[in-house]
Length: 208
Image 1 (cartoon, helix red, strand yellow):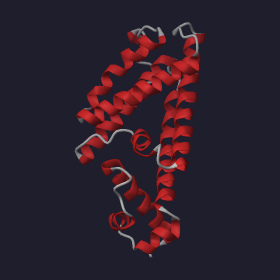
Image 2 (cartoon, rainbow, N blue to C red):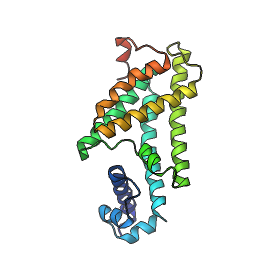
Image 3 (cartoon, rainbow, N blue to C red):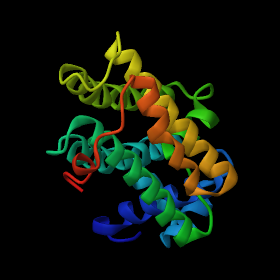
Image 4 (tube, rainbow, N blue to C red):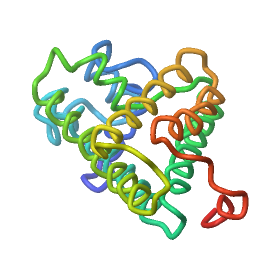
């Protein structure tokens, strides 16, 4: 078995890459271990099942994404500009993935939602928690924009749900067409949804 210090991370890294490229259902434990370069016994030392591994991949991915979202959405720029920075960071991530593997992988959470939400309750529940967290984080920024008179929405949580849905939809199109530029319409769509105007040029530069 691989060293305890790195075998688990190797399995997680291999599983995440394979899930992003091919999805979850088609993968077998032997294939994951082969890609990780560890014996099959290592898998069951760390994970009780393939579902347990998928949950660990989701949690690891969310931990990294949450840090990025908190950094961007908690920054010093005006609230609407922070949303734009989040969209731009998301597009940059899609571009980076496309350069490394030749195709746009899309959103790990969105991909697994489409594939598994009606098959495994544990994964469905965890993904629901993550998307609820997305809504909470974006909702807080929208509430700031409303308080500053820069957005006009009656229900900030519903508006945040719509923004998250727009993001996921555009990421899906980027994956479908293998084109990160599909994210480019997101900013204008978000402004329309929030009843907001684009920040002045001098304001756009803040925090970039």
